[in-house]
Image 1 (cartoon, rainbow, N blue to C red):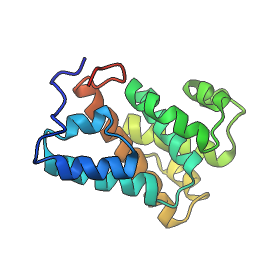
Image 2 (image 1 turned 180 degrees about the vertical axis):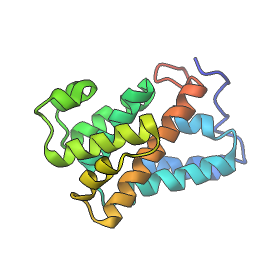
Image 3 (image 1 turned 90 degrees about the vertical axis):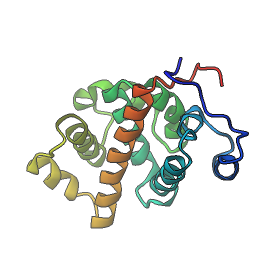
Image 4 (image 1 turned 180 degrees about the horizontal axis):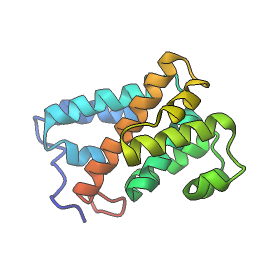
Length: 174
């Protein structure tokens, strides 16, 4: 159960944002139902996360591996619940999802995926990224992809921290 009730989606001040969310995403997930307590924050969040998820040129499977790893590292089940089906659609296998907790010992990940996962772990756990990890991930990406990868890791750390601080979960009633 969330720490505070979800926002009223029929309130006049949130109606334009609710309409945009429905148009772009099909429904208003619990995350946005919580964010809508602050329309400016919800608006900015929607714009930022839309850029990360829908306008980035980072391959979708890599993006979703990052999101699922961040969710696991941060103990954010709502984030994982929402993104597991997307990851599978993007080409991540169920075996890879199952192996994420011990990805370093798994042979299911190629060199690019391993570099991305190491970078994700470093950004999430240590904040500062070891130069060797940066150099390895840099071998696989253009500057644009590196920026998009870094922004994705950062964004989904933000998402998981928001969700867990407010105890937003998939099983919550609207």
